[in-house]
Length: 501
Image 1 (cartoon, rainbow, N blue to C red):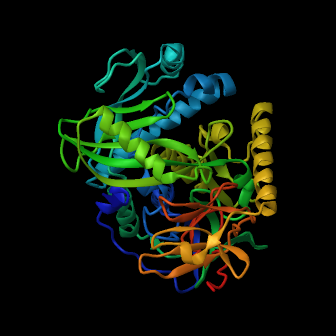
Image 2: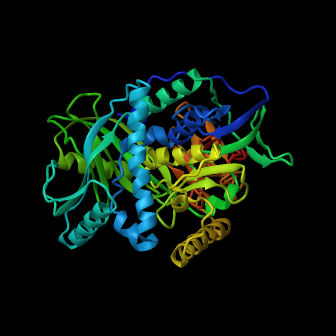
């Protein structure tokens, strides 16, 4: 089994130049995932000079590690949106999601992107009688908002369900190939795209421009779009307004044909499935076991549990790939999209709650309108500067009290550490070096790597993730490689590296 996203492993990728000289543009887009590249392409087609700055490689963030569903069916959400935000906001959300689906389909078709795009029903189901009323409420709410929702009591899954809400004519595709196609189209139409260009600072200047700092060069732009998983550093305070979550995925080959629908359970733990077309009709993607980043000490057990479920439920021939992904949840279940409250010149999109292929595309449509000075009818619902009602504020306060407790107790506790010599190749964790507790990882060649166990974002304690061999921050979701390099923000600086002896 390969420890890699199936989408990253099976997509042909073009390499793009690094940024090694200063640059001036109309729009600088930070991040080359589906949000950043869709925004960049749409903005460039409106006559703006656009450059995309990617810290890693195209599609190398969350986009390359998703389930690959493009659907307006986001579990059970519409009845809740109506109750929380009212009919108008819920309808704007639904309209944006429908438009996002068709935007993906249109771009894939018009650009000739071969990404296995396939129409299929999306199913959210329960196996518990006590959950049936929630399914029925969701069908009524979604249908009233103009979505293709219907109630079903049978699916093509190999087990009985109590009830399901079905959205017909949704999409699944190969996200790695899709974003590679977006990148190729963007650069072919004159856009500039740079890989290995991590942005470490975003500063508004007195002349109403924005300066972006990277390791090797500076970019000056009239407007900036931050399309990273979470805005870096302290930008907009979104690190305090969202919560990070990880999920686990498997690419599976069955002995029989896989279900052709896209399905997700509303029961706990969540199980999400969809066809995987590369090996043929017996391919299937399985995702589940979500939890807040850094809170699960045995991440290997998450994979084992998911594998146990799929083998007990389906006739499995082989499991070819495994991977995990991260995303952020907002307290009111709606992504933040629009102008940052800190600057009218900086636009953001974050908090897609694991549905970013569709809602991220809709977000890009909003951002492209803002960049061009055009009104967007969905913006009032997604407004990135919104505060929210009493319930939203209460949830933010509760989450940040939890973060504060983690920060405080993490600094006070006397962690259990072990001698560095006890680490075997491929193992990591807290070790004692000269009487100091540091983070250690011994690579497969036996070389010991040591890092500070305090996040470079705000100093929260880090937790070792054995399945992904990374250091993860519970507070705001930053993640670091064993050598301290940043994997996921909001951190922008690597970890300190204490001596190994």
